[in-house]
Length: 466
Picture (cartoon, one colour):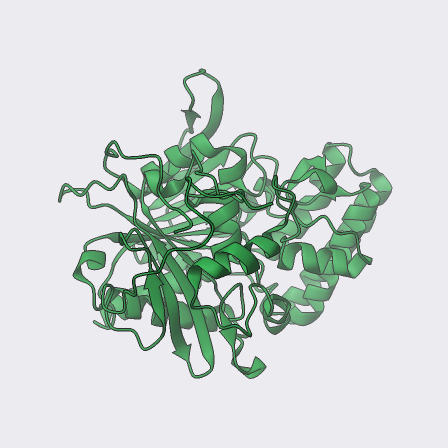
């Protein structure tokens, strides 16, 4: 049963249309009467409609010298919804019971959630041919959306934008970052670009698949037989990637993940300390081996909520009712499987060159990883960072780490090190979903990334169902 949020009635109050609040939109836009939330659609291409949702922080401080930042959150998948998962399950103002989240990232920034690429979440296409087929096409659509949001609004232009990504979202983030740099330099986009943060990001699939077997063998989740099976498929994936057979590599990745799950007796791909049925966010539905891998990573939408419902019911029920502008014939997540299939040829392509280019351009790049993640294991992340050609990588390697603390208990919660515009965070005790597993240290990290000014005292309520 869905509970009321902040005492507000579930029968929703009339919404104030904000067609001119953030510039002139050709598409529907709406928001709350107090202006704390705005949402809408942007037609980024013919027949391709992208949904966005912006929250303005009640903790906002703007002292001029340290402007209040905006975080653009990019979910992974491909096909996972930032408006749903990132918002209600990870960092937004309300949790899946529609209660205030104590660890919301609104304490440090305004939050912009986008259902990216088109076809994800509430975003939709009128023709399957309009789905993106590459990370660069996704970046072009996101750039078009940001032009619509930022170019006509001086208030947003004063706020530095930080692109924070999770999982496959990291591949979107680096291609988007390059697109933003070019658009800003060309005078096509009025935006202060603060940098990108790559959280447990699928930047180099080859390095991740080679990390799974040895890591799980050391953890006693695989024996020597399981390790040999895993490494054999990983070698096949390497050969396919090197020969440009990316679609075949995607199929082999699915095969490898199924072998890992079977040989380990269902280790959770998002937290290797757990069995998959124990993870609070990842998909729990048991299916045929290929379907397990494809659907788990493509959507991870099947988690049960404390209220007894599921995320799909929440987003297609009360939330769709609140937003009002979602077309009646479109459902949240209705096209998500199509998104993954359309990107099948790009899924296993590495994006190391893009990270190098961002670093060489002077863009701030932060990499953070949960200690107990498996799908994007720290072992794999460290391996691809060592492959970067940017000259500062060797300096980063020789730099000593600084421990991270939180909660005032004196316990080590992580480590960090930096060299120039490259920063790395190791988050202890966290799996794939760092803000969920370690909310305190995630907020601390966010504050350091965005250099957020000290937050003002503000009411706990940052959002409601009004």
